[in-house]
Length: 162
Image (cartoon, rainbow, N blue to C red; front, side, top):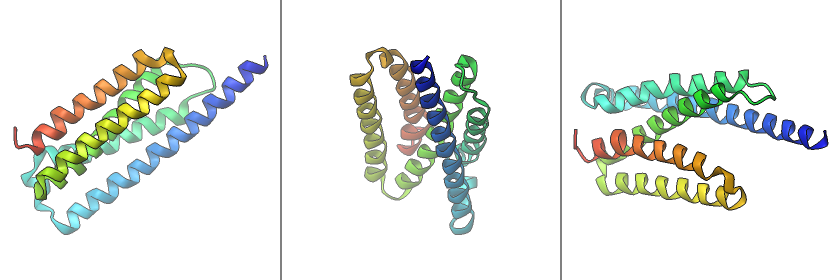
């Protein structure tokens, strides 16, 4: 019984933390969007991939936040999967937007930005897996999805591939 109570407390703390992160990233997305509109609004018409990812990061992160606020102490696998997917997409789109914008002015720095993101994600997962071996499949799927979204919708557009 004591172990279940502790697991509930941990789950609640994680959900609360993830909800806070999602809402803060929504604020960052709005801030970047307003900054672009104020400083160089033509980016939104000339850089369609940047514009699309910038505006789509907001509903994906909002969905993630709404799911986190709905989560109960019980395991709700479908909600958790939808929450992870919407968070990863929203976060990847936000990071891609920043990376592509950096690349417009300094290509090497933009590429470095993406590579460092991947190194840190993989480092985070390595540490997590070192404590919880059972998370290897989950981390592989989440990190693989995140990195693939960044490669195809971040790095390749930054390199001018499309």
